[in-house]
Length: 391
Image 1 (cartoon, one colour):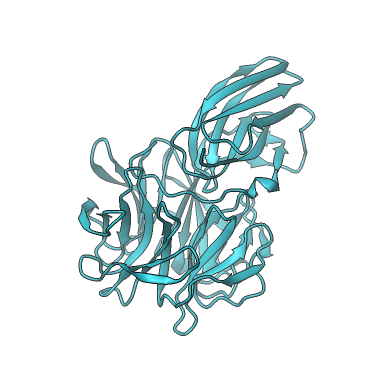
Image 2: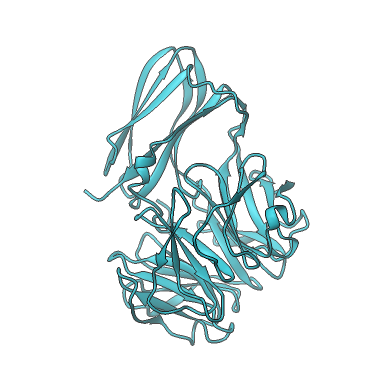
């Protein structure tokens, strides 16, 4: 696993049990979604080059206003929050078509960051002055569940969960007095986990594999490391940005960071300890969220009769068995992805002759959560959901 990989997302949503198959154009490359706050759009980039492809969500599509975060739903569509919207927007991740409001039953006040956790609920922070509790929605239906936190988090941003299931929430404050608040498993505030001081304007949080809490601070233009148990400051991880907001990892463990003021996306290589410009075109204005996804160009023509894909056991805790049954020869890539669309394991890249093929792969070290086993080829893509749970 990678040294600063993000925390787990959703589990037990395996009841969704989806298996998707589409006729595709051969494409096994990755693609990158980046929110562009000040153009009210989401832009699509080629992963290999960082070159701009198109506005996948065109400016103002579906009334999108001041986008804050892009999230890939386990069912494959895009969710986008906008400060100027009262509901989370839903878009086709291939065509960019607006699919309507995803959330219902609660009018959000300046929604910002979103996270899927292992309870199969969608958590949403709010920037509002009077309405700013962290809110939960059903992941499958988008229906309002509750205001989870017992107190508000004014100018609330990113979330992370510690090993005990406590929720940590970044409070940007006014950009000078930001802090990280801690809530127990019932949403009751237990204290300030990281006070103002070293932190100025925190916006994103995640736990690294070593248990450190990683915090992206917009005001400082830095990514900082803290003790994940005590909240004590350890030191900087990445420096040299103007105003950092939005992060992602690729399948090589490299970290991608949006720079809100420079209108760029940077890539940090842990092995070389280098920060380089990755994206700087396409008319980005105030990028603040990035998602990396395997690219698939899909149509509506089902090809499920060619190949079937199964994953056992489900749920799993140390190993999964991927079984491919194909009626004709097929060449492709079999891999595992998390709910953010990031590849976490490559199982095989090869040709499979007609018949049944079983491949075992270790999932040791993967955080609890919902994942997908994906078989992608020039003839189609097949995807099966499974859950990773504690032993």
